[in-house]
Structure formats: structure tokens, C-alpha cells
Image 1: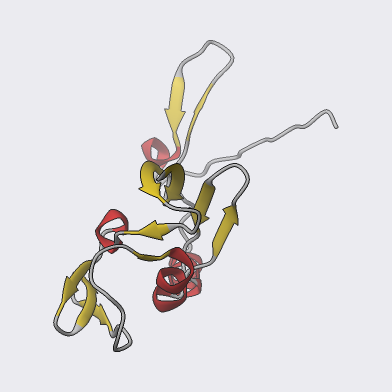
Image 2 (image 1 turned 180 degrees about the vertical axis):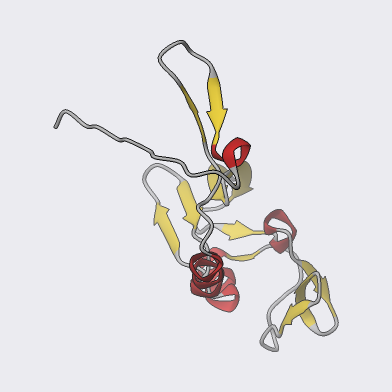
Length: 126
């Protein structure tokens, strides 16, 4: 067994797997039920013959409609948000929340300014 780092929706998990990454769907918030993989009211059918327990990460990503990037040499994998989740976020018109320190080190969250106009100035020297 090898230790893998799995990144999902800003969370980092450590997973023990073989040369091919297998992931327990519960790690990503999905439960196995007779109707398939379920989270809240959403259930996704699982093809017949797929064993219970950890699933091949590529198959899991395909079933959930999420992009997956894997660096086998570094034992790191990252699940991205599904196209439907990204589209919902864009339709909402709300920027994702984030936190940044000001020049005095005071941390400000975008959500602290909801309902007010905000100008975000970003600079990069390169």
C-alpha cells in the first residue's frame, strides 16, 4: 500500500491505496445505497459489477461528472467541481468566499462585505 494525497473541494485527505488510486466515495461525501451513490437527494447509478468499498478514482470521477487530475509519481490526485456545480455558481452571480490579510495583517473575508460594493485590486510583478 502507498499513501496518496487526495484534494477535494478545498479539503485534503490522506488515502492508503495501491499503484492505482482507489477512493471510498464516502471521502467525497457520497454514500452507497441500493439506488447508487447518493448525497442529499441526488443519487447516481453505479454500473453492475462495481464492487462495494473503494472505487477506482477515474471511474468515480466519471460517475460524478467531475474532472480528475492525477500525478502518479507524486501520489497526488485532485477532484475538481463538476460542470453543473460551476454553472450553478456562475448563474448565482456571487463570487466565492475567500480570505486575505491587509497590509496590517488583519484578515478580511469577502463574505464580511456581502451587500456592499467591493473593489478588489490584484497585482503581480511577473
